[in-house]
Length: 155
Image 1 (cartoon, helix red, strand yellow):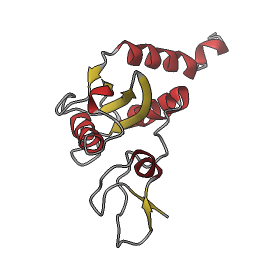
Image 2 (cartoon, one colour):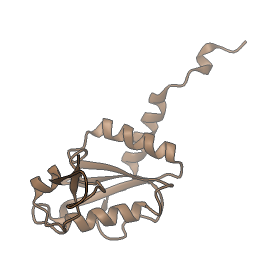
Image 3 (cartoon, helix red, strand yellow):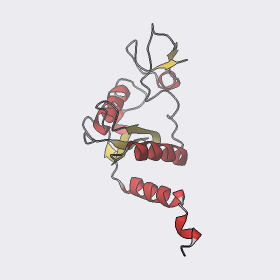
Image 4 (spheres, helix red, strand yellow):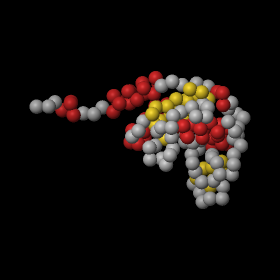
């Protein structure tokens, strides 16, 4: 007879493995084309502190780690309060959307990055579209110079 213990899944085992693997991945300067054209999860660091956790899903219409990090590089490099030289990143390549979503969710809860929920990484409608509320909290706090449709919050 099989022990009930053998049928119990402990998500903490998986979470511990994810965190150890993530922290073992190399920290790279945030620069254009730093990441591979693959899917997975990533973190942005400012002055050595994780400030944003994001993802690039396999079903994301060509969205890759490279594309997302390039977008962040472009956004950060347009403003003056955060020198791009102070930004670094790391990532884990993953191919399964379920694991990418679960990993991003876990890493956000684990690290509580300051820029998550601030509108930093959003792709939301801009000025003149339904739901427009103005620049995001991140844009207001960091003084980014934006085009009319970038970085705006949605109702």
